[in-house]
Length: 286
Length: 266
Image (cartoon, rainbow over all chains, first blue to last red; front, side, top):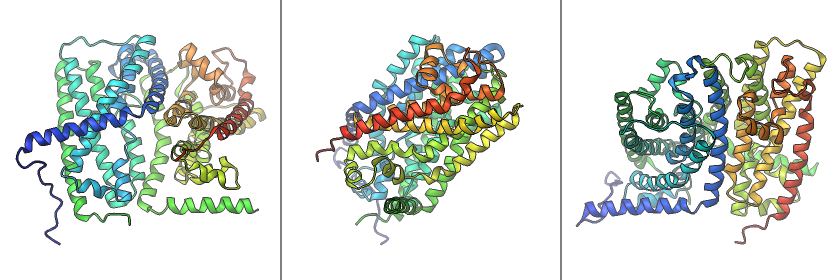
């Protein structure tokens, strides 16, 4: 039994690097195409994002109108509106919710098909998720932002480095969120059923990533703890803070650095958990 | 009696399947309770930054949040899982529901009565109790009556909205998220004084769709406050009527939907 391992042989022994890149890109493409077929869901989801955009924006603007200096948490009204409307689009790019594929496949036993493929499940699902994120970036960010811009004054970046930093920050948020979701789904290896942890994730990530309210409205010690000790602000709050230039240039770049550290840590953790799970996995089904 | 026994059997089966994975179920139970708590914590966090939001204090807003929390939780517990209809329609599993000699809606509701949401009810009720304790309500018989009717009417109203948004799946299969805008969106809308919203948006949600009568108007009447938006005090008592209208519309749409259903053809 000791000889059985789940190590993955290289895809093409003769040209391993280029073959791996080609496979990775093919998987990104398949993720993109899969989500491109859910057209009704895209339209329905966008409509709901817009409704919530109005709800959150009006509430935050009313808070700003009543706050000292009209700047709750250090945001002015324009920054708050931008935070909400870009956030409503970015939420889908990052993909906080709704990914239960892995948990379902573990529960039904279909995961065995992923394990016999010559590519690690973490890498394969990451590639598919990047494809999904690319599709969401093209379809889900524009409409809420357009509606927001029509009804509210929005903030525009003033520093040259803001847009490239934002782009990097979004990619890091996608990778970080993927790793977190992978870990939550992977609890099914031990529990068989991951519904509980998934609900827990949906709730926790929404609040602590800054979707319900900007985390800067929390007491400072709590906000700093969240940023340093958890990957969650890096999933939504950090890219949004970078875009609306909440902080000076140094802190703006620093937050993206912190986000990168967390993305790497979570991805490594996902790989480690996957390896542990493979050693104890008893495939379900008959 | 036979029918009741059939429903009990359906429900019992679901209960066993829900509790089969104990750890997962326990986590779900606790998280669900925390979910309602988070909505309330959000209100506290926002009021940390401002003493008045939309012209109302934290305590006054909490009364609206409390009525909404309890009403929404009650509706979500009893008919909320109707949003699974989308899956039934897409996979064609609704056929199995239709051929049984039982009504469609109760079957679907009982098919997955979300016991995991039971804890939310306690949280919802505590929020309402907290809000009442923090406000100085001048109790009269009319206000006591309102305190009972408003959350229950609100629950009936949210229940109708749940059914309406789920029924959209009969025409448009991938519509799940569309309904969330009105169910969860409606909850968020009614958790704050409606004075915070922009005029056309408020008119549409509060008066056009009826959400203004769920918690805002009843809370004003309980507090004895005049409506800054100009509606008279008796509108606080309108919520049962608004709920009935919503139920009637939901019943008609649901029936049309079931007739429109043509299975998957596979």
